[in-house]
Image 1: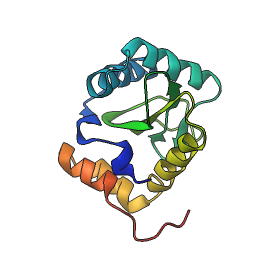
Image 2: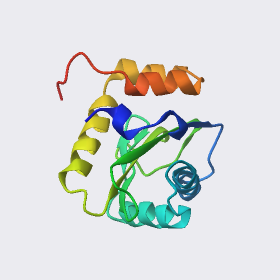
Image 3: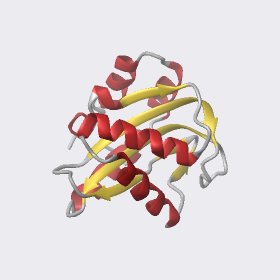
Length: 154
C-alpha cells in the first residue's frame, strides 16, 4: 500500500484557519462528500465518535483523525493544512496545523491499521513535515505526501 493509493490530489486542501476541531471535522466531511460521495454528516459523526475514545492529535502539530464508514470499498484519506494552528487536545498539548484523516470501510480489517501506520511513519519524517509546512501549492503538497520513501524504517 502506498499513500497515492489512499490520497488523491483533490483531497489535499489548505485553509487559512479553522475555528474548532468540530469545524475541521465538518470541513473533512464536506471534502469526503465532494471526493468520495460520502454523507458529510456521517463523516462528522464518525470522526467525533472516534475522538471520544481519545484524541487523535499525535504531537508535533500533527493529527491523524480516522474512522470506519459504510459506503467505502477501500481506505481513503484527506490532508488539510491549516495556516493558523488549531487546538486539538494533542498528546503534547500543542496546536495542530497538519491533519491527515483516514476513512476505512466498516469491514476493512487490517487494511485500516496498515494505512494508519503508513501515514504515521510518513508524518514522523521531519524533513517531509517541514516541507509540508513551508509549501502553499496543493500539487506540491500532494507530491510531497505521495513520494515514496527510500527507507521503510519505522
